[in-house]
Length: 151
Image 1 (cartoon, rainbow, N blue to C red):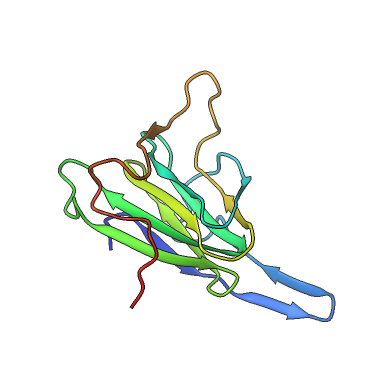
Image 2 (tube, rainbow, N blue to C red):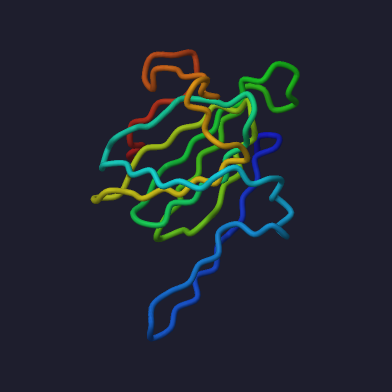
């Protein structure tokens, strides 16, 4: 796994009223700081990526649908430079993924309906100077193709 990427299997607790699922707690080993929480949705087959942050870590969970979350370590001097991690997370595999600053990441909705993704980054979004370095999802130097892998 890419240095600094961490995962936490999420536990869903159902009862007759509905379900509860904790995603990130301040006493979790992977918790470092709170910035904000936001919801992002992605339509089936759509890729949102690639980007990385210089200042913030992301804590990502998919709470509806399924996504293929992919991380690429392009950090100079990293012990895992050049590595790719792929996680299928969402309704059928509840998981929180911590993506450290400097690691490219993105996701593709792989469910037949819109995916709902919750992110709890360590910094607030700066509207004047966004902390995002972006690449085209399909034309770049990252050794990854977003297409479905049949076979």
